[in-house]
Image (cartoon, rainbow, N blue to C red; front, side, top):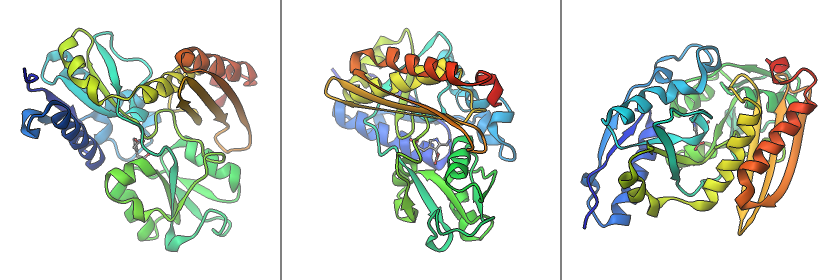
Length: 308
Ligand SMILES: NCc1[nH]cc(CCC(=O)O)c1CC(=O)O
C-alpha cells in the first residue's frame, strides 16, 4: 500500500525551501513514490516579515512557527519542516515534534571580508550577527571588536560582508551547506570557543499529535541519535527558561548508548560565562539536559532574569 499524499508546510526562505526539498526527496525515496506525491505549501510567518529589529524584541522564536502550527491544526498541512534551532521549547498541545533528520555539522562558520580570520581583524572591526550567542562568543574571544545587528537570509548576510557593510559574520555551516554555499566560509569555528545554539544543524518535523498515520510515514527518515541529542539540548533550554534574550549554547553528542553534553550561558558582552558538562546514558537525555540547566540557573548571580 502506498502512503497517503502528505502536504508539507514550510516557511518561504531559501534555506527553509532547501530543507523542505530534502525532506520531500527522502520521503519519496523511503516510500518508493514520486516526489510529486508530496505537495509543498509555503506559509508566510511573522518572523519572515520583521527584518529591522532583533526577533528577541518582538516575540521570539514562536514567530517562525505560529502560522505553521495553525496550518497543521487546521489540517491545511500534515507536517511542517523546521530548523530545530528556531523551534520554541513549548508547542501547542495539538502538535508534537515527530522527529529529526540525521544532524548536519553543528559548527558555526566564520565569513571574514577578504578572508580575514577572527584573530586577524583590527580592533574596532565590526562583526554582524543577529544572534546574542554569537555576539557574546565573539566578544569573549575579542572584546575589542564591535558587534552589530545583521538580519536577513543567508544570501543577504553574505552580501553585507562582501559590500563592506560589516567586516565579518558567522553563520551555521549546516545552512550554508544546504544552500550550496559552504565554500563561502573562510574558517570553521572550533566547538570549544563557539559551541552552537541548541538544535543547530538539525531539521525537525512537526505533525499533529493525533495524526499517527503521518507520524508512521515519517518514521523511516528520522534519526534516533539526533532525537536523543535534541532531547537533552531542549531540556537544557527549558530549564533555563531559554528565550532568545539570553546568550545560550548547548550541544549534545550521542555515540551508542552514551550521551555527552556541554552547555553555557554568557553575559551579553562575553565578560562572564557559566558552563557545565555532563556524561550519561543516552536514554536519560532529557534528565541530563534539565539537570545541566538547573545547575547553571543556581550558578547565575541573579537568576536567568539577571542576564536580560
Ligand atoms: N536563525 C536562522 C537559522 N536557523 C537555522 C539556521 C541554520 C541551519 C541549521 O542550524 O540547521 C539558521 C541560519 C544561521 O544561523 O546561519
